[in-house]
Amino acid sequence: MLHCPVCNSTEVYAVVGGYAGFIYRCKTCGYRGSFIVEYDTEEEERKRS
Image (cartoon, rainbow, N blue to C red; front, side, top):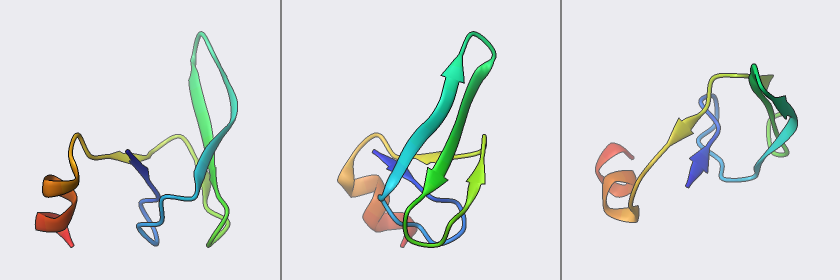
């Protein structure tokens, strides 16, 4: 599950992507960048909140 590194929202989607990587955008706070937080399970997400 992808999360915004600024506001921890899950409303994140890839704007541009390809061979070199992805640029993501957060619908909640407007963050735009290549750094994104990804949790493997919901349990890990709860531990970090």
